[in-house]
Length: 371
Ligand code: GDD
Ligand code: MG
Image (cartoon, rainbow, N blue to C red):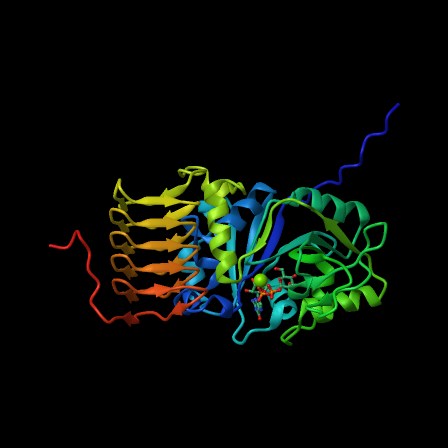
């Protein structure tokens, strides 16, 4: 007789905390006006992908741990009913770090001390099976269970070695000498009582203080290793990549169910792409954009109201709201702030960034559709 796997019972209300208080410095100037988790990604605010995924895994209530530009979150996401969730908002007056933010958000939780609570970094796209991570956590009766992935450049992340049973043996945040390519993917399941032990109101790093402390104390900290799609969208290159991957269907997001993905481009309401323009590579053409004849746009993100002149070439770039790119201009890996204008004939390459409203002359921006 084969033995049946033990499936732990799920609590009736599964809660999650989303960490969204960071300033998104590496994504400036895009994050000057909009916090990173709300940047339009495959046509919806980035958080929509995480919220829809959480809901699909059985989460019913989400506490958003906000700090930077806090008010914009509730304006954008409301009470969460659009995602089939209840969203509540907690704000830090001054940023408390990842650990302090989790502790602060715990005030708004309903979960019992022994119940699992999911905690997510607010800038990660992931195809991993959250329900399976929860099951491992319950089965092992762990204090915390960390989603782990392998990356080629572990020094930029939290390096997380495990033993042969999958138990985490150390947590080395952004170490110049990583001992493994396996890193913290920014999705945790905490036993709620473990969160309550973090000191309230004190700046604390979950990566540098809480996790190493739990390991030193002999608590069970488990790794949930996984090989499915994973990306931290915290840099311009990764942000563009993530949006394109969603449009191309490399990662399925339940937030995009009704849209035109997968495809080479996603064209939002009221946008016009001239039939003689070429738009490829999972580019998003935001609402009300205009792309003129002969323009080539590859693997890029155009926020709303962008205009691209005839014959311009744009690749691997992100263009803020209302940006105007003149005829025959060339943009490659450029980041252009809201309302900036790049005049005819300019070339911006290799990660160049233009601040909002900058007018890059010398000639004025012309469009063949202007009268
Ligand atoms: N509320 C609040 N308050 N949120 C914060 C604060 C804070 O003081 N500081 C950071 N956050 C949020 C950010 O908004 C983001 O969603 C998340 O915490 C992680 O911060 P990042 O700034 O994106 O950190 P990182 O990418 O350098 O490193 C983290 O993520 C990696 C995986 O992407 C760490 O957790 C690494 O260990 C991990 O490998
Ligand atoms: Mg990050």
